[in-house]
Amino acid sequence: MLLSISSSNPLLLHSHPHLSSLPHFPSSLLISPLINPSKPKPSTIKLSIDASSSPIPPSPVLKPTTTPSPSFRTKPPKDINILVTGSTGYIGKFVVRELCRRGFNVIAVARERSGIRGRNDKDQTLQQLAGSTVCFSDVTDLDALHRSLDSLGLPIDAVVCCLASRTGGIKDSWKIDYSATRNSLVAGRRLGASHLVLLSAICVQKPLLEFQRAKLKFEAKLEKEAADGTGFTYSIVRPTAFFKSLGGQVETVKGGKPYVMFGDGRLCACKPISEEDLASFIADCVMDEDKTCKILPIGGPGKALTPLEQGEMLFRLLGQEPKFLKVPIGVMDFAIGVLDFLSKIFPSLEDAAEFGRIGRYYAAESMLVLDPETGEYSADKTPSYGEDTLEDFFAKVIREGMAGQELGEQTIF
Image 1 (cartoon, rainbow, N blue to C red):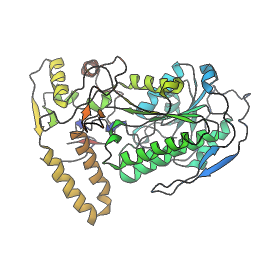
Image 2 (cartoon, one colour; image 1 turned 30 degrees about the vertical axis):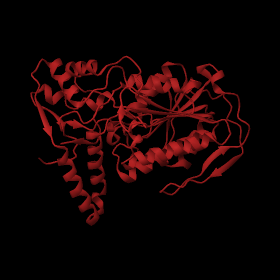
Image 3 (cartoon, rainbow, N blue to C red; image 1 turned 60 degrees about the vertical axis):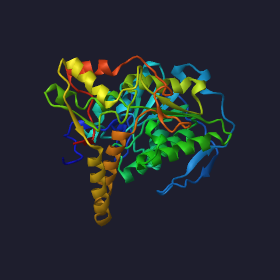
Image 4 (cartoon, one colour; image 1 turned 90 degrees about the vertical axis):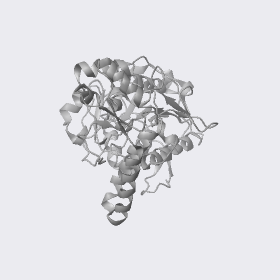
């Protein structure tokens, strides 16, 4: 069997589709009618510089040295300004929608061309993020981000960062999962933000991949920022698998093909959470002081499900006899070994080898809390949230297809 990484293949990496790319784009600014031009610009504050030790060229971390103002949580939602980066990413769209529904003033930073491979123009982005103030800028360019936000003339109370590398490639991971995410913190703090909610990933517990290391480095920076005594707080949200990352085989199985899984289908498990439920949990983290300065793993309702159980559920909903294609995990190990060898000769293959490692990781590692006492993944210790179930999601996809649930850049087979 040939292992390849292709957007046309059916089996999606468990959880990896939450990664959303943010390639370089020109910065400009568009302000929606929701902006109140009468609001005063934030007052100037004294800043100090904290240089980063990241493996990429660092940009300064700017921290207010003035006495922090009273908590923004004492204000009604209509008076709270929340900056959202990664707003056009898969989870980001749901987060913007949920925050707007709760009555917050949402400032959504977006690329001029957003979506997979930049397919959405400004008008489509404005429609997608309706209800928010859309700021078209470049989160990978800190100076550009500062200029764009300064043009709004609005203070920031809290930041919600939903940035994630779409591909998981080595350079892209550090560019987005660390550097651009750090820029979100710097820009928000400069305008007065005292809290940041970070969308991370539960898989960082066992960091074997570059994007996991990049995420952990930023998590450490958040913890350091909160320890500096300026009143800053954070909430690190580590979700399990998303529904759409488990829906990649619905159409193929519906068409009579087997359900593909690695080994016996019991190598890993997850407690998948819907995008709406995750967005609701992230919004809770803005105002709930019990969730501050904590790492918050979160899954959906119900028991943990293995790929075998997910496949059996799908066949039951389709009224078909189960038919599985079991792929030995050694196939991936062999392919990764070949790619690692070739990447030493052809550096351009470095990311291909990393993609292979990503596939191998999600094929064998559970998206559950890793119990530090036992070293085993624990479904019981993985918190549940929400009401949406994977079975309901599968049933909807069977009826309506995967419209709006695009699988992104990377799949297996």
